[in-house]
Image (cartoon, rainbow, N blue to C red; front, side, top):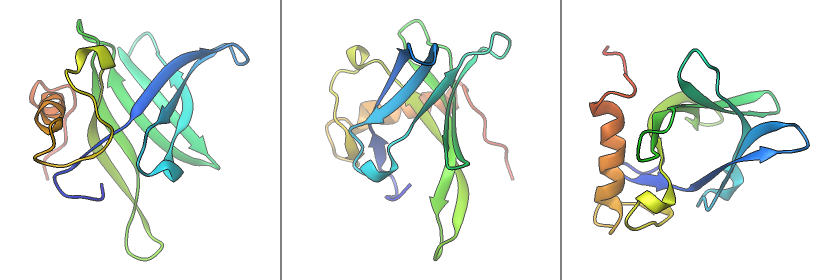
Length: 140
């Protein structure tokens, strides 16, 4: 959310937690490491979507993605809070893609700006989220 036109890429791992007998997720390789998230994964039968939920001191962040496509990508939406003016936090949403590393020709993490070797392939994945559409943003 901090640089117009840039894509922020980081690693998200979904794994089984024996202690809680549940799926969890954890992020890594973020350039804004202070905002690294971890939380629970929910896969309800009826919705056909996967939910990655963070609850940090009562503040929630929600990712809703599709179940994996035939090639393993999961397309969806990220809803969180963005720093606004002063100390104000503003709700914000954006498309998100969780793609298996094996399906991405070149992988890099961090702020991926236009001209970066990964930019076009990452942008194509994000565009598919809206173009297919896996998510919809309501018009004004």
